[in-house]
Image 1 (cartoon, one colour):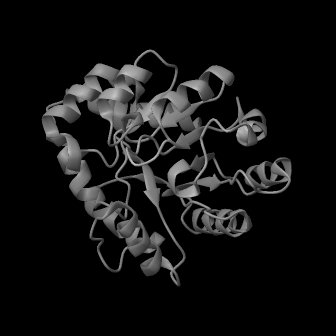
Image 2 (tube, rainbow, N blue to C red):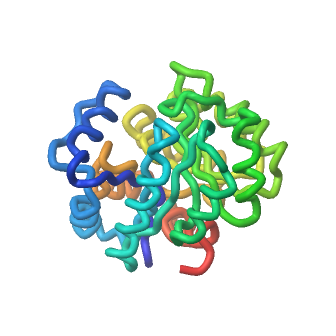
Length: 263
């Protein structure tokens, strides 16, 4: 079975160490040194037996969008059999149509936003031109549900989904990594995928299994959120949840392929 990790971050070698430490400070988690580059991710993938990674980074300033998208595209070009690139956008960027066109031209396969670190509401009307341009064409992966902020609350995801019903959306971290019960109650009947990344450290194996089955394995994607967590550890933990072979096959392989289209 081809295993796809749908949630991994990579950074240029020159800034990877600083970027990883910044992520650690944001979440108050001690991060591993030497992580964060494409090469280190692929080595981790080899240890884990992971076939492909969906990789992305986040532009916290609008003038970073173009350089980040070029970097992700370059890494995909260097590792076409292992990496699938998602682009970044920012609500204050100029000429959204040109940015989205560039994302298509670079061969990126979707878009990732992180409303909390980018400091905007995911249902902000400033983002509607972006959603309009990508609906039916590119999937959107959204960091969701930090109790410290309102930017990524699951109810904002519902508003986005209702405004753009034909937009393929993945709500990361069960749609709310720190508010999973609220996320479930809010999103259980909505038309979106969820990933299970960066949740085990809070929920534990029993609750992970329960939430996967409550949402439905046909909606779930596996993600390690490297470099926050080690892909081998996350995949090993995933296998310990007591899911059926069929559920594992859906989450690790079938569902991501459905979202991504032909690989």
